[in-house]
Length: 401
Image (tube, rainbow, N blue to C red; front, side, top):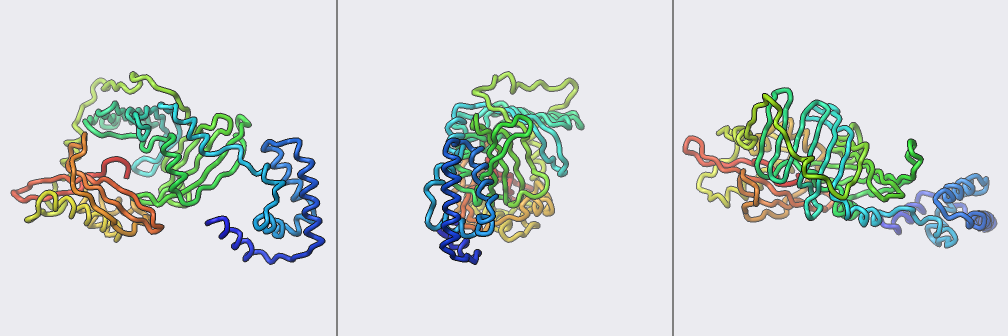
């Protein structure tokens, strides 16, 4: 909502009793408070200023009039007190020099259970995603990504899945680019101030949301005012920050760099190794899944199956989604995309081969959401020949979905 619209809404909501004598009383009190507070310009004096104003009986009974007066005419003597002690641009500037991060907290596993975690990550040259990552979960699972090789240890099966090419990543990287993009594109950026109860340090709390594919997202950020750094982060797969966050980083520490040795993985003694790409491809070989190619060329089939897939998501046709992308059931896809606000497909690119992607060709799909925001998602198409019949399936997405 634009400032002018907020003012109009205030005027509509409040029945203001215009009384010249009362207005002079209110303004006299404000000027008196201003002169008393001018000796202190810190954020604490802001709180004191507001409490002093609101303790006044006259001000309490005419709070609506004060709000409208400030909104419509401005009271310049208060402007110097409303300047925030923190701005996102300050954090963006500071974060550019940090290429490493450590965070710990809880996340939801595939069954929706909270699991503790520790993550170490190192940014790529562009600071858009992590190049190297180490994730140690409280249930014993370990994931290590070193450039183009990924290892995932499952202690229950005592196996290590090895993947060559694109692997798990902290994407987007929680740095300058991410925060710049968030402030520019989210729907309801809101800031509030407080103190960390353990250290008494000043904090800024930011909440926002975005209908990001495949479903809605909302966030809660905690920034330290003095260092300007992000120190806490929560993410939900809904627009209202309801329920358990899927990711809850309770502690975040930034580093200028992290040693490469941290991302070296030792295969546990006795653990079996499996090729993760082979496992994934095996799940995509059911002849009842996917889309027959008939007389279509590979280029035509690529574009058509991607179009059908995302249109099925838009239409909430979960059975078709599960047939075209058979790595999950219709119920799982419905849960994953729950609450999504995808409205229409805007554009489909020509198929192309992405460096490092060994599963198949990629089609970039640009989608519009209900609020007119757009996003481009890279969709991977795998070709098959089963019983002399050519077909294709959606194998996944390249990068964040």
